[in-house]
Image: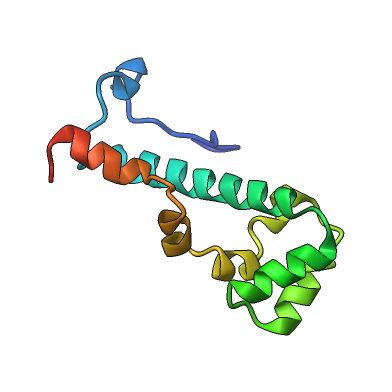
Length: 119
């Protein structure tokens, strides 16, 4: 066959049946649940960032979380949106996964593994 190939090539027997059924730990969970965890952590970082509101408070809080002064100032004074800055390295360093867990954020992956009885 020549010409333009389709962007997505599914196996001949794959249809809606390929997406049906419960998620299993070995297959789909390894892709799905970490993505939910990442997005949830990013959303919480964004909420903290919005809560701090003023650049001076943002810089002060980032410094108290152990972020390097230059990175804290550059991030705190940025005019980028909250969602975009929630992916910034300064926020990821300051509000690390361990810090978020200490604040009480639950991991969907840990809850999934516990609910499935793998622990």
